[in-house]
Length: 294
Image (cartoon, rainbow, N blue to C red; front, top):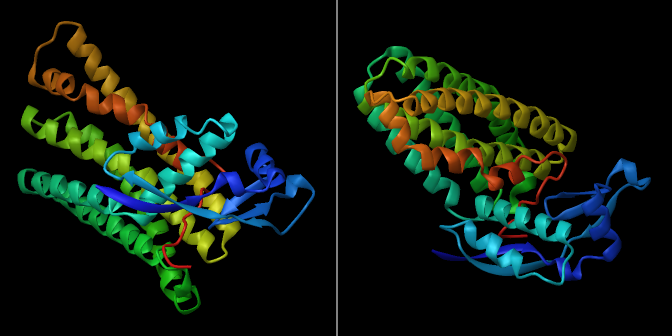
């Protein structure tokens, strides 16, 4: 689906500011470059100019192709621009909502087949968490709403903070439960965990951007730093668990569980090597969530 995104026009960013962003001496927050304390300066460096970019938002791969054509920019600036566009796709389009819909469909299937009460309890929490994330994304679409929505934003930030760690803990616990599942249920759970872990960095990014929008800059940095570390632990736990199962299949075992992991290897590889998720979780970069309405 072709959509028009607003993103930073790097050609018209001041050379000094662009260099400062590349070296970490300036940070992008909600469309504005601020001097980092390490630069020896303070305050706003530049209100960053915007341009429209038309992309197929169904495929982030097109973003990379577009950036590879940007021959006039330094490599670091190209990387930053790629991250900004990925962030813009998450914030400005239905990309995240579509991910959440897919997650909900998977959640409904598992809840219908797996009747363990503790699993269903956490499934409901997970559904509520991603619903709050989507509410935050919608709020961020219009910057003019800031003055009248401070209380709404505070509630959303509090909800996301309280429910995020429960969701990540649930994934960790679900892995031990998955060992006891049949092959049919195992494939469903693998799909579910993979989609959830692919969506989580986008949710963490939205949470950080919401803090930025309402001037909670230090909180945004703290949450991004801590959430990225917590997510990395859960992702590594999942990676190790999957590797152990794949090794079992390589060793000659042909039981249903091993076959299920063989069938999901491509999806798992895409998750574990996702450059897009890594971009969204980069500390202190705070890729901008350009509002559709200024």
